[in-house]
Image (cartoon, rainbow, N blue to C red; front, side, top):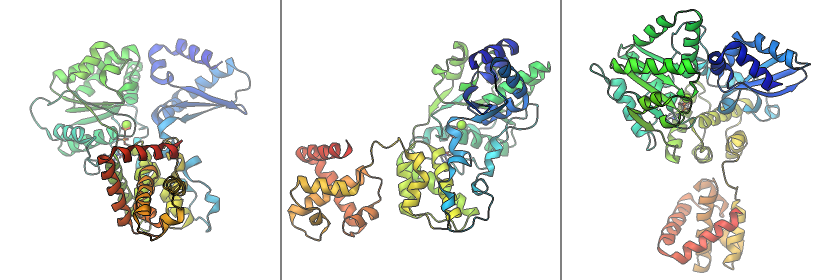
Length: 468
Ligand code: ADP
Ligand code: MG
């Protein structure tokens, strides 16, 4: 039935409107008369809700019995940012009454609203998120080039644009939108005219302009600016919209105006766009932002924690917990931010300091499926002890004979590389040793592995045995 609903919407509303708003509308489930639909962005959700809900409902009802209402949700990567549902585990376990109305109120992200839909009907462009500036952008190996290009473009004044277009691509949560907003702020502060648009808004502006027969005004407005920033262009679709996108791109670039674009893939892989538009997009500077390495994750996390602490002075996250989070959340910046929100929610709801254990619980769902297998320090100690014919208590003991020191060091090394535990934590689990002792062991084994192939094989074997 859902496929029929979509077909009818397509036939009744026309290809462009359909492609712009409904192509990515999916049916999640139907229960108790409520059909739950999902879309990938909040903007789409609000646009569909405010313009097409009745229509979709009517069509759905005529195709399927028993549908009474519709609900539109946002699917995918945005989930962690949504308060409610998974944001807090067991707030009921809170030992103290909670004064606030709920976790939503504790989420330190009112700024998020700035990315939601703007009420105005014309092409004002989306507001820039005050938090996403160059100052708050942490530079690391994987984004240094993108950051440098962004700064150059933003600070450039007079003369034809430098790299046109400047095109960023990266997976979700790696800082594209942050950089684009950073450019937007800098250009604006320099007194130049800038418009930041997501693909959704671009399509919205265009479809709307067509409807009100003001497409010309729409184009003129777009072309009367110094810098046009377009986010998530992988979502641009629909024949006349992409043609319009192509014209806008050409007109701006030919006039020497700067265009900055971001997408989740390189220009060559934007299948929904035609060849000419793709090659125009590829004709400037194309920069990929790589995944965040651990050092970068740690810095982003620190800066995020500091930002949150500004409004929640009592919120303390110790170095061991921070290290754990930076190690565990490998996917992207959005999950790191989600993790900070979880920790904050836990801390405020329980009133207890954030320990490793709480952190582990709080961020579990952000971590799961990302580690191959969780290895326990105890298992490492047992296995290594039995391979080297010593006992586990020997490994934990103070004994310093070579027969015990070597397996102990190997076990410490394996604990470091196979678990997410910090050095101090590992030290504690090895009979209360100091973290410098663990560090020494890790370095020593690392070095030995590099020099001794037999040892290298041996350690590799131990790793496999522990991970299977
Ligand atoms: P994308 O647009 O690539 O999906 P975003 O720019 O929305 O990613 O980044 C997701 C989150 O991670 C944002 O809160 C952003 O501020 C943060 N983030 C990503 N990269 C960095 C960075 N290098 N420095 C600071 N914050 C970052
Ligand atoms: Mg983005």
